[in-house]
Amino acid sequence: MRNLKIVAVVLILLLGASFLSFSYISRSAGTLTAQLDRVERSVQDGKWQEAGNELKTAQASWEKTKYWWTILLNHQEIDNIDISMSRVQKYIETKGAVLSLGELSTLRMLVDHVSDNEAFNVRNIL
Image 1 (tube, helix red, strand yellow):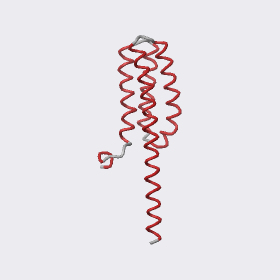
Image 2 (cartoon, one colour; image 1 turned 135 degrees about the vertical axis):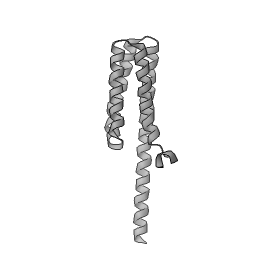
Image 3 (tube, one colour; image 1 turned 90 degrees about the horizontal axis):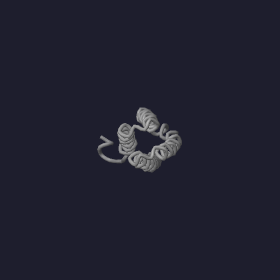
């Protein structure tokens, strides 16, 4: 009976930790996506200075988020986001609208992909 209680407590702790980590990843991905949307709107409007400033804000947010994501996630996903973030920065610096918008779309997809992969659903369990 005692072993059953220990197993139940450990299981509850694991499920709780999983829920908390998913909640954090989902929230931080949503924040980052919203910031990238602001960058995209600035690029579409041709406001390059504003786009650069918004991107710096997104990069600062990403640096804080990345610390915790490295503990919780596959590093390949994080590396892909870093690479895409660097590309967007250069495309905005050179005022390449088409390339900036394309890479912003890729970056948003990468961030959303991380959140989707961590969700509790049958597809991720099997």
